[in-house]
Image (cartoon, rainbow, N blue to C red):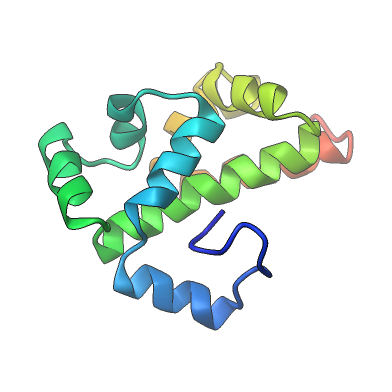
Length: 133
């Protein structure tokens, strides 16, 4: 999902870092938007950019370094949720609904910071392995 040819191999870590530094393309936003079935304004809220800034990014064709990191964070969480739930529909639903293990906060909201995203990943790992405490 991250700046790669759909039929091509996954980017290396070095390539991924370079993509973030260069700014992820707006197409990555659109792919994640489709994957999560979210309106523009909601996904923009989760990556913490105002609607007006999103309009500028669409014209420019790419995001800033910081915005790219936040976009990648959500891409990573969706991919992890997809791996755990084995269904895009279930992954979307889980990411958007209140999660008991996160204090009844939806995972997408909890992931507003890197530390929150790590906690969401940890919870997904516990779900994957059947550890619920």
